[in-house]
Image (cartoon, rainbow, N blue to C red):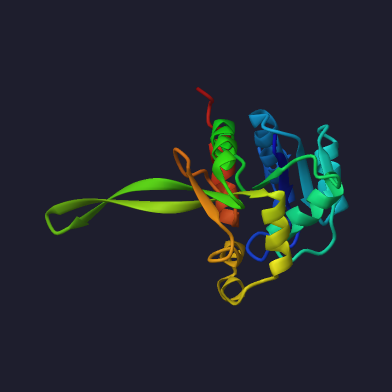
Length: 215
């Protein structure tokens, strides 16, 4: 089974202290940790840069560790994997981004099954069925939207980490660009795009969604 690691850091330009911002009374990072626990695909760790995040997770019975400085979330995951599993008992690592509090645990299971096909790395996407209107005509088009889930073999994760940031990665501030053209990437389709929390507006919308009655 894979080892699931959720990277989190307090410094965020768009939403300060993002992992500890509350949704329905609990920190964002706690919701993300719970989704991983509910999926039950493997042991779950939160990898972070703050004692406050560690306390928030451990208070709920979870496991968290501090890695120190990391250039991106996947680099933090690589550092955490070496701390949480130094003998490398887990051949695969799931990097679950800490900004999807409503991620469906079933989708995590789909992703874990898809990782069995990967050579070095996997990531997720959803097909968005969009309808555009031009004059009196309707056109349906499919747009593939990337989802912040990454899977790695241990060798693939180590390779990613040792590569260091690429020029495109630094220009566009997208860590996944480091792997393009270098690692073999498996793309895994999920049924729909989960909500992400990256801004104050997203946080407000997440609280409104959390307050809706469950059916």
